[in-house]
Length: 422
View 1 (cartoon, helix red, strand yellow):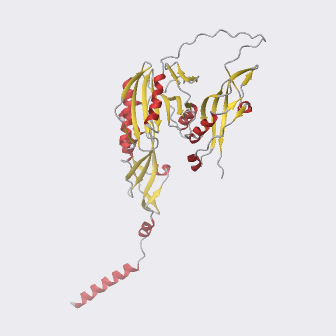
View 2: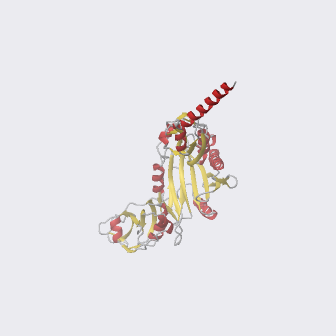
View 3: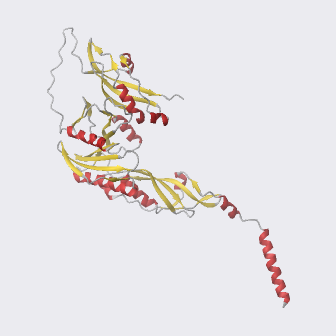
């Protein structure tokens, strides 16, 4: 009976010794070296998707005609399940639907040295309405003598000289983001009060015309504002203040929604009215409630149509055989620079210095008959430098430009350069 016990003991000892002599498995070694989370580019991660959930277009956004792109930050587990989704950018009315869909996606496990690892990547979700191509762009209107006019939409919109246009700059920015289909910038304005020491605009607004085939009703304006509010709530980016209100200006019914954001500019207000096949939307941002009200109050000066003007008699030759003076001529920046007799140097904004922002601010300027800067429009340049440039150029003084010996109003371009000294 002793022999089997000795044999059994010998076998156990031999098995233990053999196990101790074997090297650790490659998988065990590689697992220890696997990083906790790997950063993976969007294209590589896209190839690992094995299952996608259907994307549901939010009803409110669909009715309001909202479309665009949502960028998400996605983290997957070792097994390829989506464990975290956060919004990087995109319209708040669309973001939650994108998050809900991507949370249900399934990826192949991402491997590092043959072993699974967590993966962090970006996912881009596009929301595009399947509609017929939009018609030709509507007339974008004109701006003259401190008033915007658009006969197509029946708008005459005077503004004080405290408002400086950046319409072309906003149009270029919208085009670079690829969001121009059916959306047109009619007017973009920045509030820069005269003789202010502040180097930051207190408010601004942009007027968009958004194509809505089939003569949109005013109810769609309310739906648009409800979609914005819903998106803010779902992403916890801000909140709506009060209910949607309604008022009438120049024969148009406007709807107003006020919002308070957690990040960036605190106060934002959206106004909407329907005209022909378009929703006209005012997007207003401001650093205070008063700044918002200053922008909203500009609607009080609107009129349904431009005031009638009497036809001008044909120009009569002057005694020297010359025609009467034109209202305005365009001159090159070189010519206008030669007329400059007083140049105020702009103050470099401290925040722009701190962030190492430099560059050129280009402005279209109207110089009146007495040599004063009567109108400015920003056409290019870093937004952080615009207020400083406008404040300085408004104080510049020119010699009157003479046409056949008489002073005349001119339009030119002014460039203000900002260069950091290192």
